[in-house]
Length: 102
Image (cartoon, rainbow, N blue to C red; front, side, top):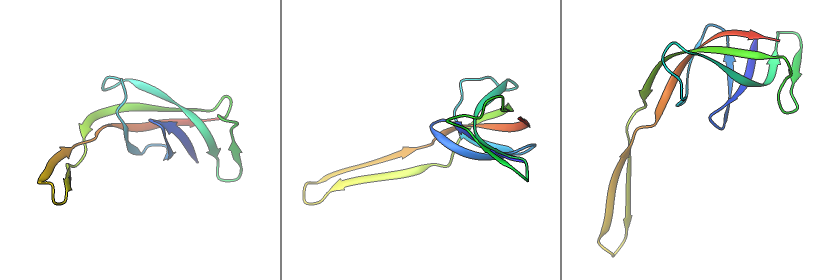
């Protein structure tokens, strides 16, 4: 059984008892969170929501917060002696999916 949820402006396919890194959530470690379900599949039948599936719940637990790998951004303008080097680390929340219910 799997579901497609919406979180952080993105859609993500999730399965029960798996860990996922998603956009940073405003929740503490150990909190339970619920997600909007766009599609749910039980192996035989798929149910598609308009825009969300009614009475379907995907519940997860916040396991940790962290930062992703460092990205280096280098911009320049030729012939202008203009250069800039920046770095970025995207924050994320690690979530364990506890249950998918219809």
